[in-house]
Amino acid sequence: MKINQIISILEENQLTEIEELKNEDGIILVRFFFDFDEDVLSAARSYSNDESDYEEESNEWYKEFFIPYLYEYANDEVVDIIEEIVEEVDLAGEVMAFQMNSTNFESMQFMALFTDEDQDITIEDVAKEFII
Image (cartoon, rainbow, N blue to C red):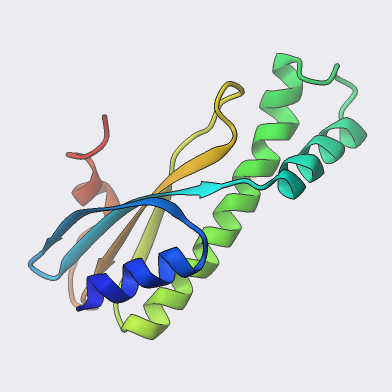
């Protein structure tokens, strides 16, 4: 039941490619993607051009400005969504963001762990078998 609520909230918040990786013994692990829309990509591009002296789309421009902007944006949005789930479903929640690079910045991958409050386990413990 709780996995259905979790997936529903993730879908309502336009997260994509949602996959249930584990759901046993009070431990729920899901993987999903945050897709950047054109407005966010445009804002990241504008920010990077305004704040950087690097040539647009150079390695430094991507590494020091563009990718960090997108990373922080997605991470903030997803943390808010996970907090919403924690409140609505009454579980503890933890999220893990995956690094991005300049060749694949249209979306960002995440994993989220949901457990009963009394579980003493981290997302790293559970996710390690699913990280390639």
